[in-house]
Image (cartoon, rainbow, N blue to C red; front, side, top):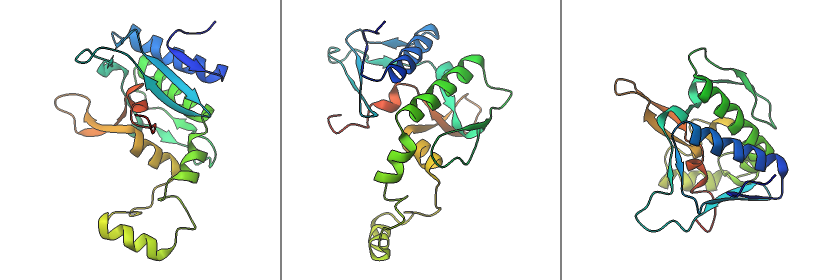
Length: 182
Protein backbone atom coordinates (compact mmCIF):
# COMPACT_ATOMS: atom_id res chain seq x y z
CA UNK A 1 0.00 0.00 0.00
CA UNK A 2 1.40 3.39 -0.94
CA UNK A 3 1.74 6.31 1.44
CA UNK A 4 0.09 9.59 0.29
CA UNK A 5 3.20 11.62 1.22
CA UNK A 6 5.70 9.47 -0.69
CA UNK A 7 6.50 9.33 -4.40
CA UNK A 8 9.11 6.62 -4.95
CA UNK A 9 9.47 3.81 -7.44
CA UNK A 10 11.63 1.90 -4.93
CA UNK A 11 9.37 0.02 -2.48
CA UNK A 12 12.12 -0.26 0.15
CA UNK A 13 12.80 3.49 0.08
CA UNK A 14 9.05 4.16 0.23
CA UNK A 15 8.69 1.89 3.30
CA UNK A 16 11.66 3.52 5.06
CA UNK A 17 10.30 7.00 4.41
CA UNK A 18 6.82 5.97 5.57
CA UNK A 19 8.33 4.57 8.76
CA UNK A 20 10.23 7.81 9.33
CA UNK A 21 7.06 9.87 8.91
CA UNK A 22 5.03 7.60 11.18
CA UNK A 23 7.63 7.59 13.98
CA UNK A 24 7.98 11.37 13.73
CA UNK A 25 4.21 11.83 14.00
CA UNK A 26 3.97 9.36 16.90
CA UNK A 27 6.62 11.42 18.72
CA UNK A 28 4.41 14.52 18.41
CA UNK A 29 5.86 15.86 15.19
CA UNK A 30 4.03 17.44 12.29
CA UNK A 31 4.27 17.18 8.51
CA UNK A 32 2.12 19.56 6.44
CA UNK A 33 -0.59 17.50 4.70
CA UNK A 34 0.39 18.73 1.22
CA UNK A 35 3.97 17.47 1.65
CA UNK A 36 5.37 14.83 -0.69
CA UNK A 37 8.80 13.22 -0.31
CA UNK A 38 10.14 12.34 -3.73
CA UNK A 39 12.79 9.75 -4.54
CA UNK A 40 14.39 9.60 -7.98
CA UNK A 41 17.45 7.43 -8.58
CA UNK A 42 18.37 7.55 -4.89
CA UNK A 43 18.03 11.34 -4.61
CA UNK A 44 15.46 12.58 -2.13
CA UNK A 45 13.63 15.88 -2.09
CA UNK A 46 10.52 17.39 -0.52
CA UNK A 47 7.77 19.33 -2.23
CA UNK A 48 4.87 20.99 -0.49
CA UNK A 49 2.18 23.51 -1.22
CA UNK A 50 1.89 24.51 2.44
CA UNK A 51 0.82 28.17 2.59
CA UNK A 52 3.53 30.73 3.32
CA UNK A 53 3.94 31.26 7.03
CA UNK A 54 2.58 27.82 7.94
CA UNK A 55 4.99 25.13 9.13
CA UNK A 56 6.16 22.48 6.70
CA UNK A 57 7.67 20.23 9.38
CA UNK A 58 7.98 20.10 13.14
CA UNK A 59 10.35 17.46 14.39
CA UNK A 60 10.43 17.02 18.16
CA UNK A 61 13.82 16.84 19.86
CA UNK A 62 12.98 13.27 20.93
CA UNK A 63 13.21 12.29 17.24
CA UNK A 64 16.71 13.73 16.75
CA UNK A 65 19.40 11.10 16.12
CA UNK A 66 22.77 11.69 17.81
CA UNK A 67 25.20 10.26 15.25
CA UNK A 68 28.42 11.01 17.13
CA UNK A 69 27.45 8.62 19.92
CA UNK A 70 27.25 5.69 17.50
CA UNK A 71 30.28 3.55 16.66
CA UNK A 72 30.42 3.08 12.89
CA UNK A 73 31.96 0.17 11.02
CA UNK A 74 34.51 0.90 8.31
CA UNK A 75 32.58 -0.82 5.51
CA UNK A 76 33.48 1.12 2.34
CA UNK A 77 30.14 0.67 0.58
CA UNK A 78 27.50 0.87 3.27
CA UNK A 79 26.78 2.65 6.50
CA UNK A 80 27.06 -0.02 9.17
CA UNK A 81 26.34 0.49 12.84
CA UNK A 82 28.95 -1.22 14.99
CA UNK A 83 27.49 -0.19 18.34
CA UNK A 84 24.68 1.99 19.67
CA UNK A 85 25.13 3.56 23.12
CA UNK A 86 22.99 2.24 25.94
CA UNK A 87 21.55 5.68 26.64
CA UNK A 88 19.70 5.91 23.30
CA UNK A 89 15.92 5.96 23.61
CA UNK A 90 13.88 3.37 21.73
CA UNK A 91 12.62 6.09 19.38
CA UNK A 92 16.14 7.37 18.66
CA UNK A 93 17.31 3.77 18.11
CA UNK A 94 14.46 3.05 15.66
CA UNK A 95 15.01 6.29 13.75
CA UNK A 96 18.75 5.65 13.61
CA UNK A 97 18.22 2.27 11.98
CA UNK A 98 15.60 3.68 9.59
CA UNK A 99 17.88 6.53 8.52
CA UNK A 100 20.88 4.23 8.03
CA UNK A 101 18.75 1.82 5.98
CA UNK A 102 17.35 4.74 3.95
CA UNK A 103 20.80 6.16 3.20
CA UNK A 104 22.04 2.69 2.27
CA UNK A 105 19.02 2.04 0.02
CA UNK A 106 19.79 5.34 -1.75
CA UNK A 107 23.52 4.44 -2.06
CA UNK A 108 24.58 7.64 -0.32
CA UNK A 109 28.16 6.57 0.43
CA UNK A 110 28.83 5.70 -3.22
CA UNK A 111 27.16 8.96 -4.24
CA UNK A 112 29.34 10.93 -1.80
CA UNK A 113 32.48 9.30 -3.19
CA UNK A 114 31.45 10.19 -6.76
CA UNK A 115 30.33 13.75 -6.13
CA UNK A 116 32.13 15.29 -3.17
CA UNK A 117 35.52 16.90 -3.87
CA UNK A 118 36.77 16.09 -0.38
CA UNK A 119 36.70 12.40 -1.27
CA UNK A 120 37.97 12.53 -4.87
CA UNK A 121 41.38 10.81 -4.90
CA UNK A 122 42.15 12.24 -8.35
CA UNK A 123 41.62 15.91 -7.47
CA UNK A 124 44.78 17.71 -8.66
CA UNK A 125 47.03 19.20 -5.97
CA UNK A 126 46.86 22.67 -7.54
CA UNK A 127 43.06 22.59 -7.32
CA UNK A 128 43.23 21.51 -3.68
CA UNK A 129 45.55 24.44 -2.93
CA UNK A 130 43.28 26.85 -4.82
CA UNK A 131 40.27 25.70 -2.79
CA UNK A 132 42.27 26.05 0.44
CA UNK A 133 42.76 29.74 -0.33
CA UNK A 134 38.98 30.14 -0.03
CA UNK A 135 38.32 27.33 2.48
CA UNK A 136 41.51 26.80 4.53
CA UNK A 137 40.12 23.67 6.19
CA UNK A 138 39.43 21.88 2.88
CA UNK A 139 40.43 18.22 3.36
CA UNK A 140 41.92 18.92 6.79
CA UNK A 141 41.29 16.78 8.59
CA UNK A 142 40.55 14.12 6.00
CA UNK A 143 37.09 12.69 6.58
CA UNK A 144 35.86 9.26 5.65
CA UNK A 145 32.65 8.96 3.61
CA UNK A 146 30.40 8.29 6.63
CA UNK A 147 31.76 11.25 8.57
CA UNK A 148 31.41 13.50 5.52
CA UNK A 149 27.85 12.30 4.94
CA UNK A 150 26.90 13.21 8.51
CA UNK A 151 28.77 16.51 8.23
CA UNK A 152 26.51 17.38 5.28
CA UNK A 153 23.26 16.12 6.77
CA UNK A 154 23.44 16.97 10.48
CA UNK A 155 23.07 20.03 12.64
CA UNK A 156 25.29 20.81 15.61
CA UNK A 157 22.89 21.29 18.52
CA UNK A 158 22.80 20.70 22.27
CA UNK A 159 20.26 18.02 23.17
CA UNK A 160 19.56 19.66 26.55
CA UNK A 161 20.11 23.12 27.98
CA UNK A 162 23.17 21.89 29.87
CA UNK A 163 24.68 19.73 27.10
CA UNK A 164 27.43 20.61 24.66
CA UNK A 165 26.55 20.77 20.97
CA UNK A 166 26.77 17.52 19.05
CA UNK A 167 25.89 16.38 15.55
CA UNK A 168 22.27 15.34 15.27
CA UNK A 169 20.41 14.07 12.27
CA UNK A 170 16.93 15.54 12.16
CA UNK A 171 14.82 13.10 10.13
CA UNK A 172 13.05 14.68 7.14
CA UNK A 173 14.73 18.06 7.69
CA UNK A 174 17.97 16.61 6.30
CA UNK A 175 16.18 16.22 2.93
CA UNK A 176 15.39 19.92 2.50
CA UNK A 177 18.65 21.19 1.01
CA UNK A 178 19.83 18.33 -1.19
CA UNK A 179 18.03 18.91 -4.49
CA UNK A 180 18.79 21.39 -7.25
CA UNK A 181 15.18 22.59 -7.15
CA UNK A 182 15.29 23.25 -3.40
